[in-house]
Length: 361
Image 1 (cartoon, rainbow, N blue to C red):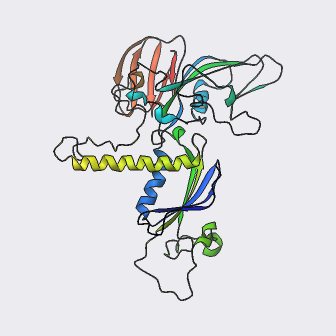
Image 2 (image 1 turned 180 degrees about the vertical axis):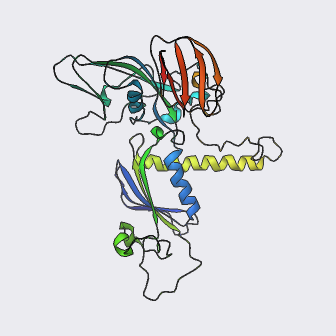
Image 3 (image 1 turned 30 degrees about the horizontal axis):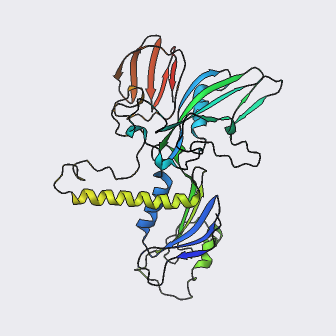
């Protein structure tokens, strides 16, 4: 992105004003003014947690002779950033008519590596290969930004060890799990000179040493000597530093954040206007009009969890799966079932079968 510092406003602007000071492929620094803190913070929270991206959600491991547990590998795969270009055309799994996953709601990736030499072998994100039909040729591919073109390290293989698996990436938001987060960090600052005295008590010994002037201090006039304090003053200039985690460019994160916020406000206005319906705000029918988690409100969830209430972050299955007989819900967040070949427990959304073939994390 080749942006020049610019002001997206006019002399008669009555709404929020945006000024971009720096922009590249990794971060965008910009100022939001002529608005209040509630709007600025709402936009920050939406950019952090409610912009749809794509991440590995299901992992089927066929062969794993490494020293790493299946759950460990599945967790590392889930946190790999995947390219989310065109994700708006991908359906949520709850909205798709397929039985499990298809090219309209998911992207399949495979990984097969075996160390046949005498030295340890490194397996990187570049070794994940998308397969099957996709909406476009970049959606779901691992994000690789290093100069060597390798991507993040997944695992290491000693001589003779092998890993073979298949992954299914789905659309989701970071409110459900951090693996769907589009941004690595979003800096948020206001009142760089502390004119409002919000930081007067936030120091240990020396406030000037502990709170040095930020780069945005040059954007505002410093307080004058003997200037009286304005008790009615409120912050109206906010400074953002949006850094991408890789799935989306930083400028797209900002535009998508605004779009999601508009959707949520439109949904709220619609529900408030529908006074005669049963699905109003007080009736429990309001869903915010914005993105939701993949399995939210989808009836029977993955692996038989009713309502999808337990967040199955990653799923992988051995080829020789034990036969399930039935489910029953236990207390204190623990699920029990009668399984031929072993017992099965779920604690805090983690499923593990002892003596059987299915492990879910």
